[in-house]
Image (cartoon, rainbow over all chains, first blue to last red; front, top):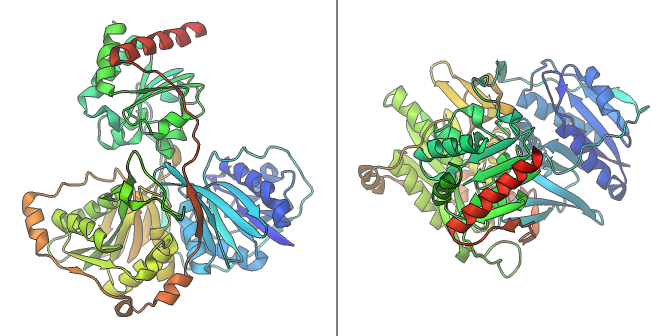
Length: 321
Length: 265
């Protein structure tokens, strides 16, 4: 029987929730692949994570101790290679996260495995694994297969699968020793995000968020004033922070904050990069304004306006005196 | 000392585009071409290291692409890169990212730089694999998603900050030569000056054939890690569109916002 290997992600002793989404992805194709589902936890503190991963349908938990607790890409890649050598999995699932993309390509390159990244859907056709991912900035989609590859390594886009929740138990927990490798980089500590001095965008119920499409820095002031009159909190996408127009504490998205409490999200000139959508696509009512009628933001919006942001804001200011 | 920057020419689709006859890619007549945004930041970081470090650092921009990709190398030269390298072979038509990584690794072996910088991902497909795969093929240290960098040639190491999720960052120390993938926002890329554009015309772009890099088409073709079955335009959910003049749009939007907010009170 072949195997599907899920590599768990954890940071500072906490399981990252995307791991449970990978389990769902594995369970969805296990029967067609006639495969066992094995979850590997690489690194220190693995014992503490086993209860959260004792899920229905999981056949085995593999603990892979490493000399260091922090994520180290060479160490993770070597452990992944050793796991593949030991278990010969048909499919290896890794999160398409910052740490995931830091070692998954190395495993695939070193082992000569099949590889696809940022995959949002998986299926089997006969013995073939077919992976779906986006192309051309989300405007197209592509289906990939992996002829001639015994093992296929896939990084899975967070949010593509619902998290597995049904508790299981009684599966064997196996500790697997892997050979050490020389480590050429070392973790020197985490740097916490700057505390929100004046604002907590993740607490706001109504966000007005600006993106690159606002055109110029002066617009941030105008939109801030409008947001104030509407009773909304000003937020933004990443390019606005990179340009220095607004502080990092205002950023919604993967590397910023999540709009946890938001009920209404007005997106002005935000194209809708997947990293931004990760922080807001769950919001109940998204209203998107963009000049590009094909902007990806419209795919997560309930209401849409194709308009120039500056012109629209000028009109809105008259309506919210 | 040399810093090699791996760059990619990315394709931006026109508003109206069409698939190629075989259904495996878009028709390239419906695209324009640009330097990958992430690679622009990687180039800028290399140029800043050179400017801080004095005159004995050479910045080489390298790309895997056809004749049309020369335009992006010229842009890199105009911004200040010393030299360009472009490699192409017919076996790379419709290649995947792993094949590109094998070719780029061969370029790095030949150039023997002290540091390789490349963008975290391509703006077109966002595969986020080339830099890390190149490092693994070379057996070099690597770090991904770097958003601050201090490189010390003398110490043979770099201190870098990796950008993690949720605003968290990680500080690392890494031995060099290494491959670092660079995140947007690490710096503000410069524009090419008119003088730079003029000077770039005189700077060399080398186009070594596979043999000169010690690789062959069969080996590169066998590195393929995925095959395209089909490409298609997904049916995306569309929102209810608010139409009309901008004044009419604003009026309807204002009413909608008041309605949604009012319902909540």
